[in-house]
Length: 139
Image (tube, one colour):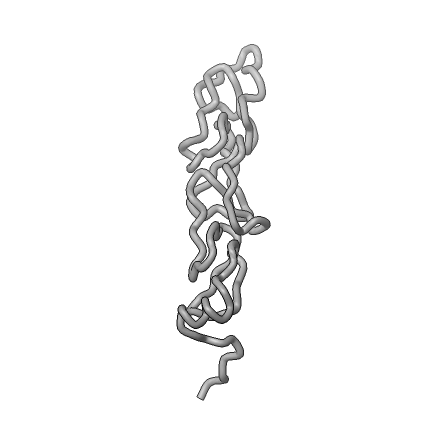
């Protein structure tokens, strides 16, 4: 036989009457009365959730404010479920606007310019004299 659970389990109506709804920013799995904060990559904007919502694409949920999500910053992209680690637009591209959803949303560095590092918001330099810098150049 297994160990007895220390977390009370009750029917949804009894839990609500006795303990109130699960609070915003938390979830109450399996009708328990012990709220758990939403983990990074998820959020809970309303009371009474058994499972937190997955953070939508173009946004991130870092866990510090588990009741909401934030727009993905320039220079980065945020696929569905982005939490603490926000991926940067790769070299050869830049994140020209907020709310990008995938690496393919990052803009290619224009011909004659270079985008040599991760997470750029705009091209950083012009092509040096005597060099050829096609679309998407890193150097």
